[in-house]
Amino acid sequence: MRRNIYDRLSERREREERLERERLEQEALSAEPSPPPRFYTNELSFVRPENLKDKTFHVFTLTDTGPSPFSFVVGRSIVALDADLEAQSQQLLKELEKTLSHIQWLEPIAPVTVAGFSAYRTEFRWRQQGQPVHQIQLLFLHKDEYERPLLIQITGTSNNPKGMTAVERATFDAMVESMALREKISSQGDAKEATLA
Image 1 (cartoon, one colour):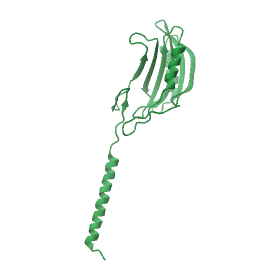
Image 2 (image 1 turned 30 degrees about the vertical axis):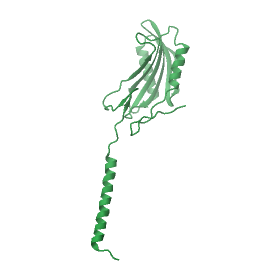
Image 3 (image 1 turned 60 degrees about the vertical axis):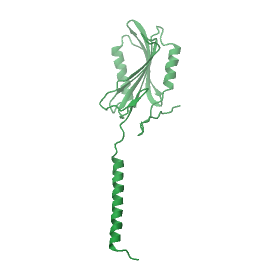
């Protein structure tokens, strides 16, 4: 049985309308903006405007007030897109030599691994207001939620007059060994932690 022209026109119009609906649906899906990246703190997360600089320091001490005999600090600072870890490390060493009086290098800067990332470690002491201060510093590059490069600086500081104690050193090393970095944040806003051996 032969179809008449009206049937063929109707089928063509239905096919064109279906194709147009599919095209519009596909455009709508691809045009949806991806959710903005989330900034994570210990207890919460939020969308941070890209122009607000993060100057976060995480400071862990043994005392509530006054100087702590031992502290563990994690700092982060934005660096250039083409930042090189070795160059950043050398720059930090120069700044330390300028700002710290009577600095004494106990361990020269050396490559290590932190949470699966290439890092540099150094150990030194100096005097602050006449009192000895002993520090271990670790540096490595990571990225913030906007994929901008960050220099992560981990510092263990001891105010013990004889230098960092074995217990303080073991605490610092255990904290560093347990570190895991968040992986890229998914579109649902959840961050996954990188599991590292």
